[in-house]
Image 1: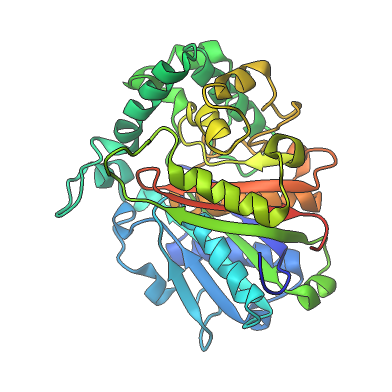
Image 2: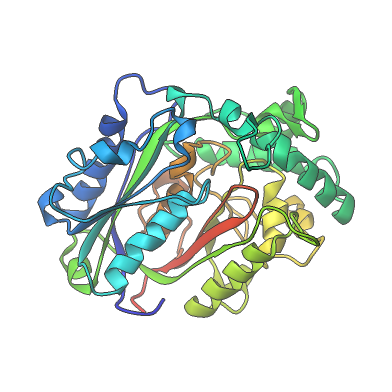
Length: 386
């Protein structure tokens, strides 16, 4: 990315659960923020600006919560900005925070994203036909299932691929203490035995609804030198969007996703993503989106993504590990899910990912997408300052 070097110098996450009745929204975001500040060796007084991200207010039934979070996040008297790009918002929020540093306007920025889905019902919110908008038809799964069926028909992928991804990511989640879904001994056969929700998506091929928050502290070169832990340097950032519907749109392989990947790869010097990226945290809310995004992001040729999954290349011990944290399939506080992908990528190159650390990871991709596969946000982080 252009401008001054930017580093991730602190990461904090809450544990992800179905309900966090023990805290308010303010308490939830503060929990993640305090952990990120502790990781960075800072407190709220050291932060120059705060950037917030969350999904649509209807998902929580709380309108404009950013209006009362300034105190909880130590932002009184400082710039506070809220970002909104639907499900990709966590990633977009991280990129806006990085831009604050790269521009030279600030030295230390706190980025926080969250969702407390138990406050309302996101599936209900996504089912309504809002005025002047397209109905998403019985939740996100109802919207995305036709695209998955189109991918299967187009690629000839066998039905076992989706359950393979679901079992792989949930096994990875057993290594992640923050993960929401923890299913010991899960197998593809166990996934195939669960009820069909939206053909071909079965119950265990869908992400959960989670409460949780994620925070990162971003800093410039001076802040990175003073931080107690290893930094993750931001080597490239990119965002793209496209309308939800237009003549000739390919919703299986969106143009915005391909263009976003090409942009961030060019900034980071990535010529071959499968060869040059050591680990990827990719937004996969339904299992079939792993092979679909393998192709959209250039890790596999068109129609070949499912073969890469079937070969075991995307397993935690494969040569292209995807979602070693367990991914969105194992924890999904929607507004935070993109920032979690970005934060987990940073933890990998900092050598701080714990039991799901990929040995020797030096370059990592964080990916998020949102709405009708129309908003994309990505960053590449590395262990060396650019």
